[in-house]
Length: 220
Image (spheres, rainbow, N blue to C red):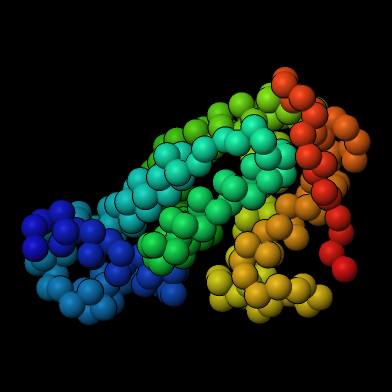
């Protein structure tokens, strides 16, 4: 196994450990024990725990950025259904790399100021690319909402879906139906869209012709 493969194996194992115990409660001793490596090997690859956590963040987002290659805008779909298609791309990446969702959750929940500052550039790159993607879609449908606002709405629905499904160690929320995370995301994105966009032809208007109805509905 080459050095990069060793590093990636440590990073992916450590990502799960950080998620279980949190950054503050995770020690280098625990990391070495769980990753089955010596302290010497740890310090050969990383300067300290903060360096490892930053590496976990960079590795995670380098994989998550694959969604920009996976997603292809379909002008024959509604605005809503293109959002669902984006979510499916995220799901595909998370299904292939199970540690990703958890380390990303840890990244955004850590309270360490120095850590937040170091990973800001990493997370900002993904957010910038995602907002640019949404900007093109919003403009295509001539919707009266900024790409930044839509990005926030998308990620609120995204995190709510995973939390509701119990994927982030949260109890299932009452009153929700469906047995997949996709079902939960659909439920939440419909709620969000219903709250911020008018239910009229503006939702389906684009530069070519009116497309299928947005089909917004509340959960039964």
